[in-house]
Length: 267
Picture 1 (cartoon, rainbow, N blue to C red):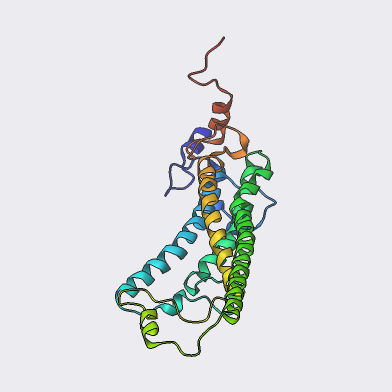
Picture 2: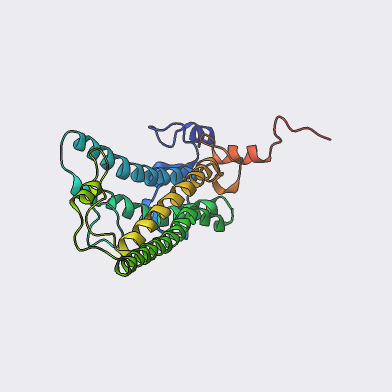
């Protein structure tokens, strides 16, 4: 009876899954993503993490790639890259879904990690590691805003100083035509950009988003590797070696955890 039960696959479409706690039919997506007071097996965790990761990739790559192809074909997509007026941050309209999804999945990723550590009998405080990119992004945003405001103030002070110097100096009412001709830029030279200078809000938000994005990307890569190489490989129930896959039954994992390794030697 027991041998027949062990030989019977849990999922006929995935015969390599032999741990009942990783049965795909038993996965509750809402609990896995939104309830931190529970436990999640390694396979259910991997499925949830893959969904969040692929969602971020697709919401960024697909719109940007499609817009680039359409622009090369002659389409005018300036509005897609223009920040939405009602959105609090200067994010292009094309990437607003990616930004919202990233913020939401920062929370759901933390929940999934908490449940995974609880199931593996590890400290759930380690799940805070997945929030490091978001925290660094917020710190970078604050620092970038401060730098942007400082840059605006410096430009404003420089412009005021130049205005005072023009008022104090002797400025002729009429400029000779020869001097005007010299003042005109020659062909091939770049002319200064026309239009109103950036406002304090524009410089502050632009600097904040630039700094936040850089820090978030740099921190997200090592956290991703930590998740894949450590968290997703922790044993179910905290019993057994840290390994990939779910091709062992619970009993086999317990025996493997207590048995000496092949390379173990005695003193």
